Amino acid sequence: MKTKTIVFLAVIATSSFAQAQGAIDISEDVSVDTDSLAGSGGTLDNVGTSTHVVKDGDTLWDICVAYFNDPWRWPKIWSLNPSITNPHWIFPGDIVRLREGGAAAPSPTQPGVVSASAPLGKGTVEVPQLAFVSTDDLKKAMKIVGSPDEKTMLAAGDTIYFDYKEENKPSVGQRLTIYDTRKPVFHPSSKAHFGNYITIRGEAEVRSVKDGKRARAYVLKTRGIVERGMRLGPVKAMQGRFQSVANGKSLASKIIGIFEKDSLIGQSQVVFVDLGKDDGVSIGNRLCVVRRGDGYGEVMEPSFGVGQNDKKYPARAIGDIMLVEVGEKASVAFVVSATTEIGVGDRLIMIKNKLACQN
Image (cartoon, rainbow, N blue to C red; front, side, top):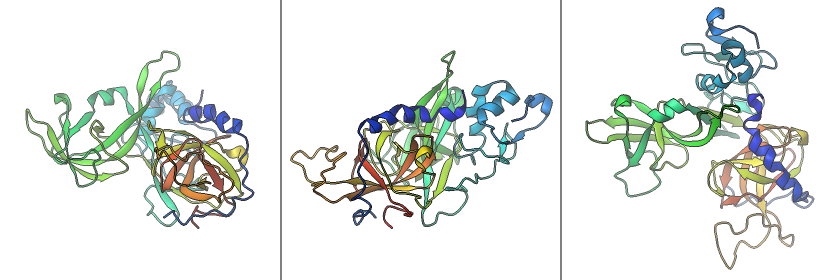
């Protein structure tokens, strides 16, 4: 088993849903109303090196077998290489750090993938990538327990209180990553828990640590929502930057899944799409989320309108997504913008030669 299968297990399993719904007619949707949108063998000890130069066909799984005889060390190796924005994206010539102190991997060169240090420009989006935290680090993690602010959703500029274990006491001035735990990673045979994928939510600076009191920190920046109950720890933020790539053809699909715990989808969330390499799509392609019908319903529930397709109405865009990981038959996409809640089953239109849903 290669690491390349891990992220796409959920995608491939759900792709049959959209296929079962039948193809989407895009003949009258090529014009969409968008006004509403704004390697080598050996072991680390006997090789005497702290880095590995990626060769054609290498995966983090293979590299861990070669150097450590332990393929399940790949999440740890990934965590040592913050410039590898996704464990499935390593390319010949990349340098992979094998232990603390090794050289960092260079930025990926795949079309649509931009250096994490490059400035954000037109057509570029920054995606909060999944990172990995080991079981031991999760046990040491601190936890947001409160705030002097009377609101549930916290943001940059807010103050937070957090609990910590005495053996992992923070220091004033220390910067901590705010994160939310996601799917656990288990060994396929022993079923041992290795840790969890996490989503980076922000960064905070410790301002006060006193015996017998909860520590206080200042939220420096956020990506998405920060809430009580989220974890804090010295995690390296692994963010990915992606550049729009002109669509090579016109296609239609549906949203077939969502990575988040919620059932509805908003801006900056990650979704699964029933299009892949077999369909001719690539990283950086942009798609419009479209509906056709009356925007008003007798019962205005949050899920109202999901999948709406009344052909008596013209298509209108309610969202814009970018493909950030492409599999053979399904892909992962980032919601760049949305004017209303999006749901699993909403229709997608990719228009040839477009660099964004709005242009």
